[in-house]
Structures are given as C-alpha cells and as structure tokens.
Length: 378
Image (tube, rainbow, N blue to C red; front, top):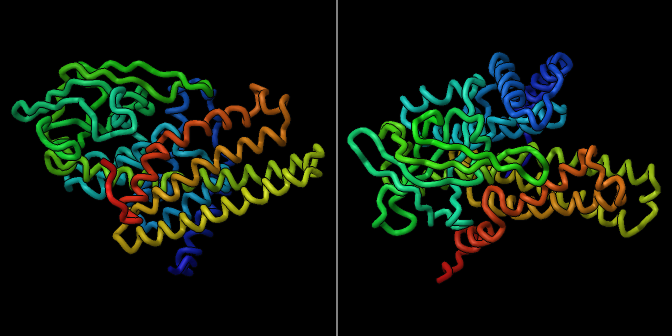
C-alpha cells in the first residue's frame, strides 16, 4: 500500500499550514474547562472560522488522505480540537454523509460544518454495558412519529447538545442485532431529562439521558427501519478509524516534552526509563503508520474505514495509558499529582480510553471475528 502523499496533497498541506499560522494568533483565550457554555461557544467559533476558510467539511467532504492531513496539521499547530462538537463532526456527520438521504444531508450537515449545532451520542445504556446490541430503549411507531422510552448513559455533551444520534429498538421480537434503528433526536423535544455526570478529571463531559414518551419523526431515521445495527457499524468505523488521529499527534508531541523534561530533571540518566520512552516512541510511530494504512484502505473502499480501526483503537488505548504512566515516572510523585498540571488531568483521562469508543474486549472480538475469521463465541 502506498503511504506517500501526492503533490496535490502536499500543496493542500502547505496552504493549510499558512492559514493556521495567520489565524491562530488572533484566537481568543480558551475558556475554563468547567465552563461548558463557554467551551461550546469557543469550539463552535473555531468551527465557524474553519467553515469560512473552506475547511469546515473536511471530516467527510474530502478524501480520507486530506482528512488525515487536516487533523495532523491542526493538532501539530496547537489549533483548537473539535471539542464540544466531536460527535457531530467525527461520528454523526460522516454517518449521515454516508447513509443519509439527500434531504437529511441538506438538513443536518451544513449546521454541523458551520458551527451552528452540537450533537451528542445516545448509544450506551446502563443495563447493556459493552454489549451495545443489548440495548432496551424502545421506539414504538405511532403514525409519522416514533414514541421513545428508555435511558442512555455516557452520553457525550448531552447537556449542551442540539441533536442526538440515538439507537433504539424498533422491533423487540427480532434477534439482538436486528430490530434496531438509528435516529436523529432533537434534544429540546418534550420528555427528555439530562443529568450530567462529572468525571474523575473534573468536567462533566457525559450525562445520563432519560426518555419518557419522546416523539421523534420517522423522517429522522437514518437508514431503513430495523437496519440501525449496520448503520451503527458505519458510525463506529469512523469513531475508531479516524477520530483519534489528532490525539496520536498530540501523544507524539507529549512524548517529546517528556524526553526534554527527563533530561532537565536528571531522570534521563535512568537507562530503564530511557528504554521505556524509546519503546513508546516506536509504538506511536507504528500507530501513525497504522493510521495511514487505515486511511488508505478507507480511500479504496469509498471513504468508510474498515475493521482495521479496531486494531488501532485496541493498541492506542493501551499505549496512551502507558504514556501517562511514563509521565508520572518522569515527573515524580509531586509533579504527577499536582492538580494544576495538565499531566494530571491527561493521565486521569487516559484511564477511560480502554472503555471509550468500544472497550478493548469488544475490539478483540471484532478483530478475532472480522479480521482473523475466528468463530463467534457462544
């Protein structure tokens, strides 16, 4: 597989770098991490700048390689992350672009790329755990509406979202992976209650969402009725295939900072630590090459990442945790536990990565069944 960039792609990279260099110095100060209305306004303001400059729809309206270049360069430059609208830009938007009707694409994609609307993800449920197919939230057809009752948990940014990509069971008699539908639910619909959940790192990035006879138009269904599991696999392929690109770049930058800190505070003299940092450098270099492979495969498949994203997600989750364990060793007890240090929040956040976007156990199952061809467990 060719992992090089074409002259046109390198020209795109150069133009993007030039625009970032001109734009970033004029950005306002970042809001307090606990100020979610402020963070929403800041993140959507950045998205509007991208839109005005012609970069707004790169998460789906571009080749996978251009998306990779965009994510790589914005992270390297220290540009704001997609932030509050990561579900819209990295999950729901690409899914609607791939699976939605012309009318659905026209309704939902422009507000996402303009920075007008925020999306959240309503997949996980308290009684389902990692078994997404065990979801129980019911959607009963009533004329032109579905009437939805149930509960979701770990719903990212639900308290500030305008829309939710929602999985519901539309046929409770069907086998587990059938009878599921993918809906776009307006978060201001009557019957929705949002209860924020504060994380170990401090901010309330997740929420419980309670649905009590919420009416959602049938026209808001993406894909055929009862075909939501297949549509969900498209969503998850984006989530695991390209959504972590910027974070790998950030981890490689963090690793460089750790090495410089170790040289400054004397920890570099420890050969065991040096070997550990060297292995992590090799690890993240390999992960970057795996991203390039997955992007190449997506390009050949028409833009949707394949099961190789699960290989990446499995190893990246562990590597990120190992990176921040190494950071604690470099900084020592005082530095690693300093509440004012970014390292501390990042290390706490890293603990969630073997659970978020599909647990490591789920990724191993996907790899075993879809890549290695092993039989399903009974």
